[in-house]
Structure formats: C-alpha cells, structure tokens
Amino acid sequence: MDQILIRPIITEKMTAQGEKEGRYGFVVDRNSNKVQIKDAVEQAYGVTVTGVRTMIVRGKTRTRYTKTDILHGRTSAYKKAIVTLQEGESIDLYSSI
Image 1: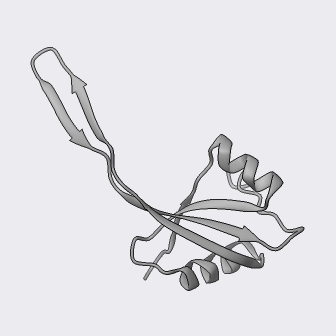
Image 2 (image 1 turned 135 degrees about the vertical axis):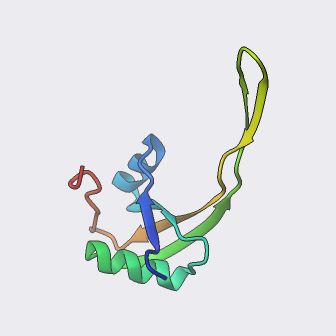
C-alpha cells in the first residue's frame, strides 16, 4: 500500500473535536486496517495514537437539472478514520496550507 492517509477532514465539527478531545479525522485507503492507520498517523505527524475508529461512508445520489435533461449521478464512497491522540498532544493540520 503506497499511501494510507489520503487527506485530513477539515470541517467545523472535526476542528472542535480536535481542540476539545484530541480527535482528528482522515480519509484513508479503503483497504487499510486500524493498525496500519495508527502507524501511518504516528509516522506522519510524530504523535502517539491511543485509538482508531473507522467507518465507510456511502456515496450520495445527486441530481442536476440542465436546460435539456435531468442528470443523475452518485458521489464516491470512501473510508473515514477518527484518530484519538494521547492527552496533551495535537496535530497542526493548517501548517501545510
């Protein structure tokens, strides 16, 4: 597996959880497991991970109305991981922007 961590999830809810509870969200490779995700986060950010929760997010159906037709489509499904860090540690996701 080349890359386990695809991108961080930067939303209002995940930012609040990161500040209060030390939890951070990542979009991860669909075939990765919790141990691989833990190792990838520890190696990439230099922190100690105490817990990993994963979920597969289903794609949503989308409808777009155009002048000539109604187009139906679907967004991609992806795997999401919520990583809990050891107390007192944090990840600065905004430093690379």
